[in-house]
Amino acid sequence: MENGQSKVSNQGCNSEHVQMHIPVAYELEQHRVIELAAYYMAERDGFRCSPVYYWLAAENDVQM
Image (cartoon, rainbow, N blue to C red; front, side):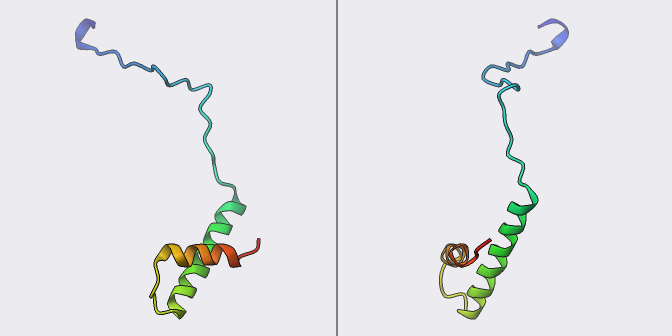
């Protein structure tokens, strides 16, 4: 390129078709409720199981 400039290829990057998922307040609140429920379950259980176990159990228990 001229004057030491380089050309960056935008191949495969079409900004018209890129969609971002922006969480809404409900999703953020639901995540926080599950997070707290999982933590309190783990605390009551003495943190004996994996964090994933507690997360999945909390997801199952939380009805939003």
